[in-house]
Image 1 (tube, rainbow, N blue to C red):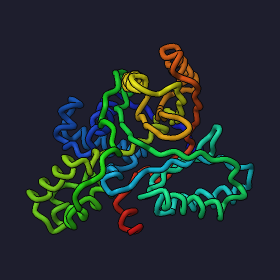
Image 2 (cartoon, rainbow, N blue to C red):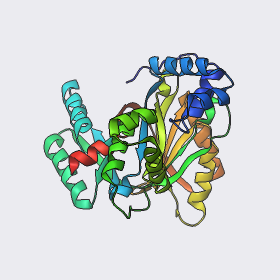
Image 3 (cartoon, one colour):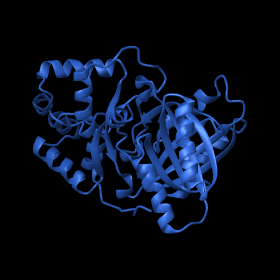
Length: 333
């Protein structure tokens, strides 16, 4: 399990994190302005957050559906096994080209894996290969499809209501081919979304004006969801939980009402809409299990006839947190 640290963040650090999580490409001058500090201090504080590992990197979140890909979710329980077998299992998962993201968990499941596939046959081929290789240690599994996904700001950083960073994506297929030049720029942004326009121009052999136009087109078309930092909140004393919500008759205004409630919570950083054994997954970053229970009790009190059950899982380790899509698409093809 990843060690939970308690690095002290003052109000300036929190303002920087709050600003950069909305747009990882925010210029230093603008970051300084919203944080009410000088440009020099803003640059220094940002570097310190990177040095401490609180900011793990800056990435470009792309919508898989724009590349004709569906995200399948596989939850797995493992039997008690040797450390070597468990290590080999997760090494296989981490290196697999179709695994977009995965988490090691504590709870009713030991792992959650996001698999990229164009159709059920591709997913089935992945699952069959996994069972052939590790079926002896897999005791149970649940399969879902991610219908859509939305990100929220971390309201707990500034003790404010969370805000929607991006509304649900993974919903609309892409209708036109991405140019070779656009693909090249996406690869560069996927490694470091804060890379400057000058450096992008140098590496892609494209002028800055054209690059700005390409990036705007990619954002307008929904290929680029947003430019995101990967923030390791374990470094500041917060734990990462998944909450799996099973609902009674999840139709009409029921799910929108729960989603609206979720958007108002300071500690719910994402909501995933699913097809499978449960209908919603909440991603929660919170400083104690007691506070998580309190938040979920509020949910049940507010929607007593809607929430059938829920399961909570502590994500002890994230793998492929970069959510790199471009490199996987290239290598899969």
